[in-house]
Length: 473
Image (cartoon, rainbow, N blue to C red; front, side, top):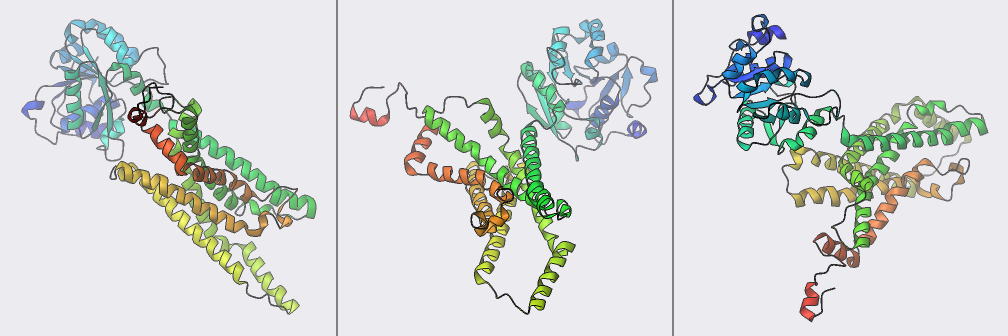
C-alpha cells in the first residue's frame, strides 16, 4: 500500500486557484493519503517533516521540507499529527501567525481531555486560525476514492473565511462538507468517530432482553414441561420451532414499541396543555431511536419468513404428516374438510404476507436515499399511516393464528402459562386501542391545536375569546 502511494502521480493539472501550496505536517498513513488525494485533484502539496531526507514513501509530485520551511510556503497547514506532538508548534509561532491550521486529530476515547484538540491548538497558537476538519475520514477512504466509505466531512471554526477555504478543499476532493459552526462544537465532532452505534444501543438492549425472555418462556412451555410431565424429549424444537416463535413475537412487540412513545408524548402534551415543555429524558431517548427499533423489528420479521419457508422440509413435519395419513388409514376414518378452518388458515397467511410487504415498505422508506426523495407529508404518511396499518395487519395475523386457543383450549396452557403468542399481543393491542381513542375528534382536535402552539394556561387570549370580548386568562 505504501509503495503504491509513492508511485501515484497527479491526475489533474494544477489550476491557478490551486497553485498555492497546501502544507501537511505529518507523513503517516493519513498525511500521505490526504496529500496523494490533493495532488490528484490538482493541488500543490508540501510536506513538513522532522526528517525530510528520510521521507521516501510520499506520493510523487509532493515536496518535502522541514516544518518551518514548509509552513512558510503555505497559508493552509493541515496537522496530521497527534495532540501529544503539538508542543513543537510553539517553536513555530512566528511562522504560523495568520495561517489556517486544520486539525484532523482524533483521541483514543470519548472526552479524553477537558477541551477538544482543536480548542487546545487554538490556545497553543492564539494568532493562527484553527479549523477542525477531516477527522471523520479515514486514510483507507481517501485511498479508495471515497466510493466505499462515508463522504461526509464535519467542519467547524471561528473564522468564516478560514472555514470556507477548508470547505473548498473538501469539495475539491469529492467529499461533502457539513458546517458544524464554531470551535465550541469541535468536541462533539471529535467524539463522533469514536461512538459505537450510539442510536442502536437502546434498541439492541430491548431486543436482546425480549429475545432472551421469550426464548426462555418457550423453552419452559414447550420443552421442559413436556419432559417433566410426559417424559417426552422435545429438545429438537430449540433449533427451528422455538426461534420461529421468538422472532415474530419480538418483531411484533418491537413494532408496537415504535408507535407507543408517540402516544405517550400525546398524553403528556394533553396533560400539560402545551408543547413548550420538555419530555422526560427516557421518552426523548425512546423517540429518537424509533427508526432503529423498526429496523430491528424488520430484521426479525425477515428471519421469521426464512424460518417459515423451511418448515415443509423438516423431518419432524414430514413424519407428522405421514403419521397423520397412516392413522386415518388404520382407523378407516377420514377427517372431513373443514371450511372454517381453511378460511382461518388462508386469512392467517394472507394477513402475514400483506403485513410483511408493508413492513418492507416501511424499511425501504427509512433509507436516507429514499426519504430524501419524498416530502415531509409523504414521509409521514408512510411511516405513520402505513405503519399503523402494518401493526394492524400483523396483530390480526397473530390473532387469527391463535384462534380459539386463547380461551377455550386449555391444552395450550402449560403450568397455567398462556401460549407465547398471547404475550406478543399485549403491547400491540394496547397501542391500537390507545390510538383509536386519540383519533377521536374531541382529542385529536385538541392535540392538533397544542402542536400548533396553543396552550391551555396561556396568558394570551385565544382567538375565540377575542371575538367574544373575553379577557385574557
